[in-house]
Length: 422
Image 1 (cartoon, rainbow, N blue to C red):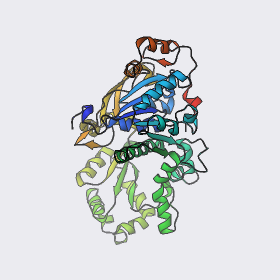
Image 2 (tube, rainbow, N blue to C red):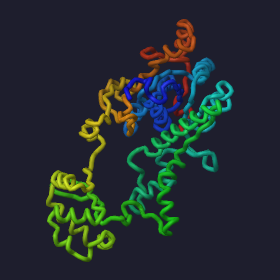
Image 3 (spheres, helix red, strand yellow):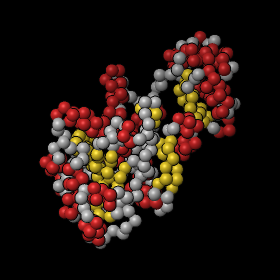
Image 4 (cartoon, rainbow, N blue to C red):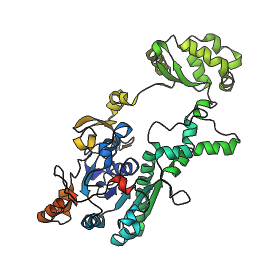
């Protein structure tokens, strides 16, 4: 497969999104990476995630590649008219704002399906319809109430996962729903509404632990307190204060491990001849193994484990992955330059970004366009919709739309916070 847009699975599919933060933008990014034309509708002041700091500084630059940007005031009737014209020819509309927000703007499914009966309407919410759907949800909220924080932290110390797992996966499920609806539309000729939600996504993530309880009658213990199925399956502190994760998960691997590290006495000990026996003996076995392995460096252990085919992993920080030799060799990272208003830094930033973790026809899905500058495609899209240069200038002067590198007018404009996130 080559990297031209026409060769990609969703080439020719038009997606219009009104999304921010992570969940909704992830859905659009997946569809965009697969070839869809994704048009991001932003407030004339810009998506608020363009200027986030701290843990949100990477949101916009990560989840908005391969998209176009049009800046529109959707609180103005003229702005809604622009959006309606865009949606009249769209295949998919995606949003992730608080329930009822789109209906108030005349952009709910009932209204849009009258304009375009073929449209597929994807909503990313905190909860699917039910007793909780009035609540405001965040990834951390549903991790706490959905059992994931309990499973991640030590006893009595619930801990959220270290990345936006529900937001990202919720957006992916929104994209999967959109793909399914597109396939069904091929048969019926009609669009439909698709919903994805943070809480239900989180429940799906912990479903294996729910089933564990159903099957065994024993509650799943938090990961730091769990009884491992394998005796050696842990992080070891080794020479020079380094750490490394090591796994020895079968009797064959145990023999290889003992031979490689001079543990003949343990290899011949009948009390720990089988994996289950070694699990039972962890209280005395692991301290002995930790003491023995502390004499080796992480590099020495890695070399030996790789040579004999045992599972191991260095303890890597996210920033270290920019230089990961496997990612660089396999094309898992793409060079990208973020425009100043998409970097959160006020200046262009040249870096690398992680691509979707899959191949089609043996090739990765390439970066075709960096995350757009605010209003980068406003002029071209409005001209495509039939607006004249005079009409466009009037909309810009009134603050209804904004083009790249042009100042916004004085017309009031809703922020993402006013619309309120799901």
